[in-house]
Image (cartoon, rainbow, N blue to C red; front, top):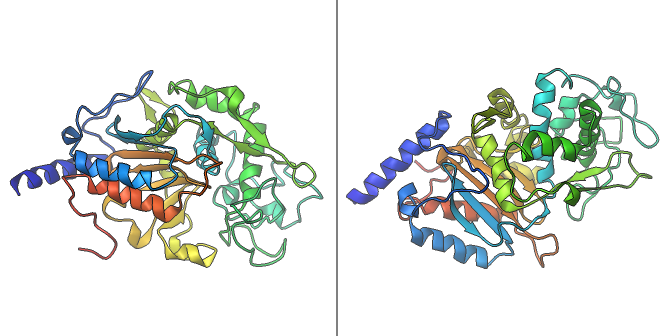
Length: 370
């Protein structure tokens, strides 16, 4: 019992430091990630991590990386394999907007009319009043068809719009909408004056020393007869996905360089749409609200190890998750040709299994527990 109490105390101290924005053992990867010497030195038990492995073997997970305090605690599968991130691309774009918003190059209150945005057959007058921020929060009310589907088996929106085009006041209604996200890529490229992938390489991949990023591996998907705005797909390795999450965990700081402001990190990772206002209705069952292109643990789910947590989510099983209470980042991917997806509930269970490895299996607090 005494050993468990000491481990739990150490974990709580680490968590308190992470929540205050100060890690007691902050470090940054250079050309490669350093590893935790032993799980026990970070407050985790090998038996608990073995349980994570057993769980992943029952899923279609390609690879996963777990970083604690800037070092790899656990990894699974080929860490260098580059593949499709699906909608995690959107969370990355939210980060990319930061320096341009703060420089005044992009105004969040600029309307579609202000930035000269249109599309095949034009936008309706009400749609032209949607702002850049409305698009970043998936609240634009612009239900023009997108160049790609918003999710597997659905159309441009993940759920039915509440009315026909031109009937929804921008800012009034959350609906996950790929037109918003793809149009943001066009807005970004206009403002930056360069291709989105070149900007990512210059602003993030190069200064953060990504191990596997290749400009030529990135590619967009287009349906110009449907929409002028292509989907800007990203292709990264799991260990480089972990660097993306780690920059967010460290509030935009990277080994002495300020790549994002802490204010922008906080803004994009704070819920704008609370879980109780999500659409379609099944999303109100939790645990996520929505910020600026990031999914946020919200309401009764924003507690314990998920206090202050947020994640990027992509189809089939792509996730970049930031858990400040554990000073942890988890990057997970599933190949796009996998026989089945790793679902959100399955991935959430994996996160709980990781958390349960702290202190040799101490239980994970769930909503409603005291």
